[in-house]
Picture 1: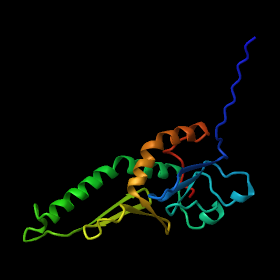
Picture 2: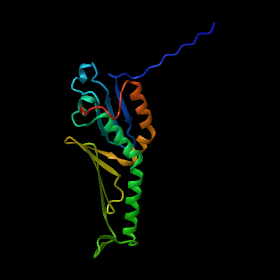
Picture 3: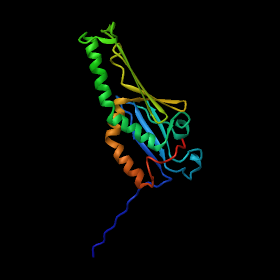
Picture 4: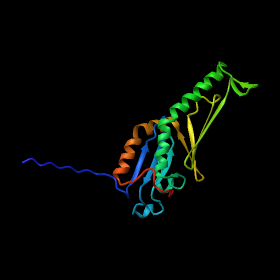
Length: 199
């Protein structure tokens, strides 16, 4: 007689789902603690349903415990977090290409950058890109004078901020966003677009 057995685990609505990119010697770590519903564990009693606590850690470091990290984490809704991941996955490569191309032209004096019909500049430049996704602001600043600095976005929401490495976020999102969405649905998350903002 042949017996077939299958045991399968999945998160549920009160699970703590961690979406994590571990730090390395070259990259900072990124971690999102996701709560579809407030867990029953007393340790998470202050957590709201439909919330994501986004934090980072330095290179070669581990993440702080949730009790500590939650005090400074940027708190997002689940749909807002997915939108931010999608922004880095889809929009960042084009922004980076546009910025670096214009920097190259300005530095080489190939095409002067026009401020007005009578004022142009070359040799050095600074670029500032800002976008709003719902009520979160993403700000990217870069200068030709600091070519070795990483491409970082400042994410700001409700008075809290976190610095996100754009290239790391692009890789992180490209490799995991669809799996994350699938597992959120399997855990019982109803609709990524229609949830109210509790964070």
